[in-house]
Amino acid sequence: MVQRSKITVIGSANIDLVTETNRYPKLGETLLGNKFHQFPGGKGANQAVAASRLGAEVTFIGCVGQDDYGKQVIDNLTNESVNVNHVIVNSSVETGIANITVAEDDNAIIVVPGANSMLAPEHIKSLEEIIHTSDVVVLQLEIPIETVEAAVNIAYQKKIPVILNPAPAAKLSEDLLNKITYITPNESEIAFLTSESEEASIESLFANMYNHGSNYVIMTCGERGVFYGNPTNNLQHVKACLVETIDTTGAGDTFNAAFAVSIATGKSIADAIDYANSAAALSVTKLGAQTGMPTCKEVDIFISNKEKGKLQ
Ligand code: RIB
Image (cartoon, rainbow, N blue to C red; front, side, top):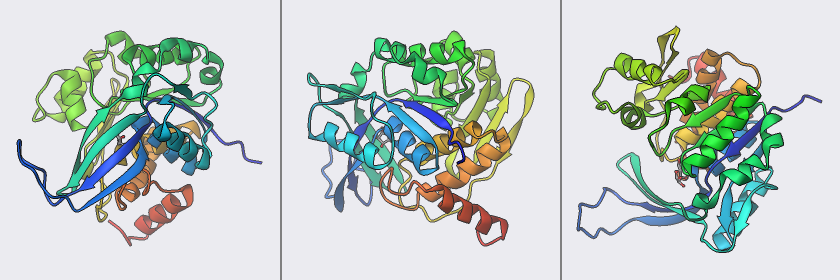
């Protein structure tokens, strides 16, 4: 039997409260929306689900409340074959939620972290062995930064590759940046991390990241594709795949998960980015963060159609 790669995702789990509207409301305005949905979400849980659908053996470490939403989160992860043995259920706080407005081919999100803020460094330290036996560890920034730092330090001791998706953006120490193998900001996150404007040149943003200690920087830019490089390799660009966009929520999560699965299976960084780019393109063709996350078979078919010129 083929050994599946082991991915540990440490991060948030939310319930997404999604409203579809034709446009975003102005400040102080009341708008009538078109539809309302509830979906499982949270960047951590989304990345765990995407990696599992792409064939990895995934352990999710996170924290939910002892409420209906917490139960929905755990049931959903379990149905997606994600190991939830190390998810904490905290009775003193509600499960995290995300208020998402989908309009104008984009989305706007407000996260109320709730139980996600209770995921403490001590819990991560007690799970050192899980991290040390992972092929790749994946993190985002919807949990306390001390918890992210604890996980990165444990992975770093044993040279386990770490992918940090710095979303939502927060200031990161040089020490932390230096211990992260791959950091994957989008355009606004890289501007925040470097204190540069979003109009700054890609070269200057990347130089700034390297000056602050980063290793591989992979910048996802939606329709502008992906830029990547490290302090000793030239900046590279990969074009976005053109697909019909229904909802971009979760595209970044799919990208990070697919990249993690590819790196864990030993692919080169260029191949891993191509694969992640295709998986992320597929994810935007359905409403909801997890609904459009593809299986490995779906990504393989998409890539083969792309190669045959059936897609752009
Ligand atoms: O990346 C998308 C996710 O961001 C949503 O599922 C929402 O829960 C927020 O965490």
